[in-house]
Image (cartoon, rainbow, N blue to C red):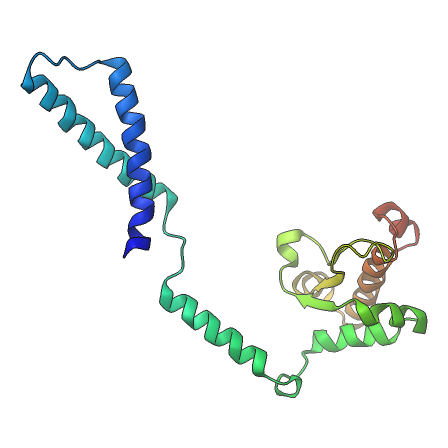
Length: 191
């Protein structure tokens, strides 16, 4: 209950301070009569409540409920307990595995410490793949290669051979980034 009220109380406090300051500066209260003072207090209270309500409405209620958090935790724990045999690799995962197998042995050895992940968020990034981490010589960040199934299948899925070739090209492109090549250099390699 207190967690639900915190944003409302915070918004009310901000609105009260703002409205009170504005009222004080624009129309200093006359303390000569109780009626005038009461009108100022009631008006300020009404504006504070209105401001708090508008602020909370604009912020929204993005926080997950406890039930949603609990369901998410249970689902995560269930997925973590699954063995790899329970989930059959998809056709796209098999294309990625085949692309890794077609790399020269030296590059396969490099990928022993770099996870290759498939994702369906390529349209968000407008990309076929991403490399995260520094170059192979810089070990200050976790290295990983992400291949975006949604954009690759969207643009090349009409032809299985073309899709396979583009998955391999994208993997090699991101691997070149891992090896230290910049975007210009990677494109100069034809990747």
